[in-house]
Image (cartoon, rainbow, N blue to C red; front, side, top):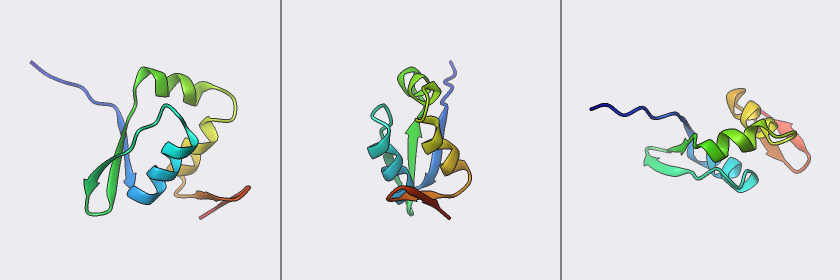
Length: 72
């Protein structure tokens, strides 16, 4: 038996911010300053909607939102 997990792993603080901005995202702490957000069907759908995908694109680029601006 096998299991496939699709997830985003990254800086815990950054992913907590994403989970606050995207209702379908749930960050699970992994320790050592890292967290994991499972890519559920609901999250895939939410990211596909206009505007929400910006949060995940920024994570891939190592940026986070400060007010209305994205910063590195």
